[in-house]
Image (tube, rainbow, N blue to C red):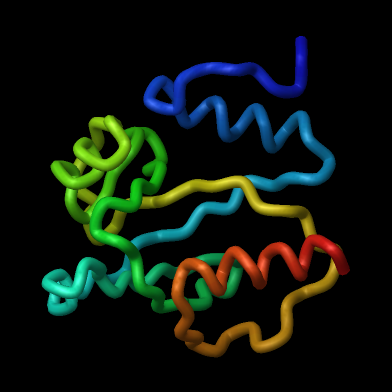
Amino acid sequence: EPLLKLGKVEDMRTEDFVSSAEKSPALRLDPSTVVRIDNSTAAKGFNLLTLSYGENRNQVEFESALGHPYFVYGQGWASCDPEKTLSLYGLRCHQLQVGDICISLSPRTTSSSPGQGKKRRWSAPDQLQHSAKKSKE
């Protein structure tokens, strides 16, 4: 069976993330729980999300575009504004809620990250750059 199987993003299931992580030595399943959704910045086009992650349940707060989709364990795609997600990406999704467990695939790392246990604040583009730097280390 091939490591990667092509399909439509809207047809993805929780099992697709799990099996990809199991088959790949470079990727791991990375669950994070939605702790808080701050809608006070929605007029500016984004919400502030707080997620807890890792064994120590570290928290991170970041800006999320209203229509940005997240994959929720056992439910499928969700966002802070499902109508906006549908109009932007053609992706039907649920309303993201506190308590949802978002899953993604992240690079496996051998060392623990500095600053564990601290609450950090960053925006999504910074996260992508940070992840890219970590994967090169």
